Length: 355
Image (tube, rainbow, N blue to C red):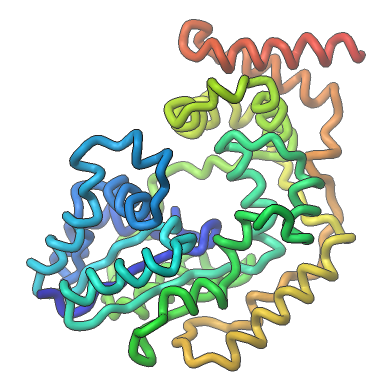
């Protein structure tokens, strides 16, 4: 029986990849220090979240062992005498019954169950979330994405992953006071290891001497590259947008062919959206201040910074997109992914006709 188990449920785009990369690359050392990451690899935690959440399309692609991932993680935790950590942001978007069942499973494997949520200000999350959606195959332009999030259209998936008070309420239901923890992502310009240290404090983990250089490369895209990928998505027939293609896009096409095809120009939250983002953020902070959650960091850091001037992916010019498409084509193995090759070539041809 474990002493404590920590379930890190998100939020998406709040430094989760950075933390998970560090936890997994130092898994053996963490085990020596009393913290177990059950499972064989990081993907086991993703598979477990998919099973718990009921991600039917994803579960259908899993092998038998992966479909049993959640049960294996629980059993490994039960056999451990120290603390354990399970981490994946897809847990955040679980149905209430699924969350309750997962917490009950963990309660049978550890003396204490703790839930950890990391959260970042909306002003930084929104551009990052749109880019992540594009990497997953989304076709929606940036301006349209912001408008739908603002109006909450079609049960906007964004809020199921980013409504911090709702996620905490879901996953803390039935937990004793003090066992739901909110770690606030520090503002831009803070020491790069501050989030790591804040999360370690929640885990009660001594991280002295541990490496804080994540080995997974930062595959964030500039505005031209991101808009080019969105247009590629538009030209990929929906029946061909398979989980395998998405894995290829994220694992190879983006880092090997697309990244660096244009100047790395970050994009901003347009000033016209700043008021509603601030209003929503202020309401979130007020809600959290009135709660009994354990907060590590300053809730004020969940308020967006003042709007920055700059461009968005919608401002990418035809000449910029054409230049980037030519670079991408020069890097592609034409026998590798013909679906993507043809889409990039079609975009290049279309842009040439508009010149």
